Length: 374
Image (tube, rainbow, N blue to C red; front, side, top):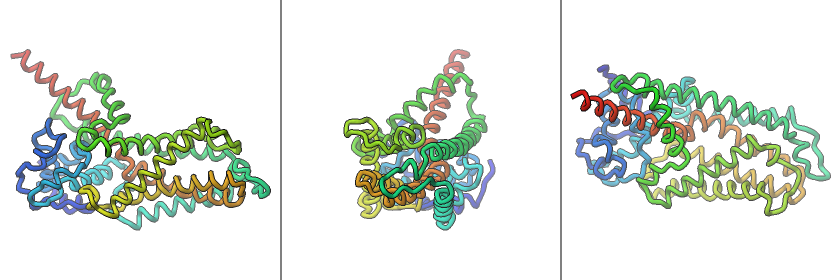
């Protein structure tokens, strides 16, 4: 096995990773509700770092199997914060899956991440200045100022680019964790039969429910559903959602928009408040990425509310200007944070659970064949 003596210092660039005091007592494993299938979870990945086993770490799925409830850190007799160590490893692994190198830059440099967000925001505002339509001031005509066909074309182009980065990085994840792992022979059929695991975990995040209170799980699930709803409305159904028509309160366009907005505002505020007061174990440490995404998400929702308010109050110029600011916040959030930041974890975690289910099934099949052969 190749040993990289610089691995520990490299990992620490992505967050808190104080495991030098760990004497492998197993308290974290005993306390973790998700360790029942692995007696080495979550210690194995941390030991890989300490031992400099870079290849083993890069091919590991274990950091994604942790949902950071904080119980392991609360019970650690040496205060080595294993929960935060796993969070740091997820950032590190995200940078390894990303072939562009941008995730590594954003996670390790405040200037890079803030600079990228400001650069994309400036680009969006410049496009708005060049391509906006006539400014009607005697009434609100948002679709005249921001032609829905042009905005929708921009959205679809952004969706294609985001999909390319996410899919290509997901393929790198597969290559590192599955294709290079020769410890178990995996029949191709398992990738088909185990697809249900990918779908179930992506849609429900049920494993999260197993390790935390149902209250925290439902809040997180609603936040994801709210974000997904707004994303679909804006990217796929923009011509139906962005309209100058004021629909009655019972219209589904308004119901869906209000649901997504309320969920995003309430739970992003709660997340930010939790990180400020630091009452819970999971909020003791905060990386820049832990702040940026909820802040951008909250600002996107608030500026969307203001556009809606000014539109209903028949205030043309405030509507148009706020819409431009809204776009200058929403687009950087999607372009920077979704493929390269913390929001990409929503893709990598279900994939990790899917890949792990395939490995577990393959091991079961090999054991069955071995017993049959005997």
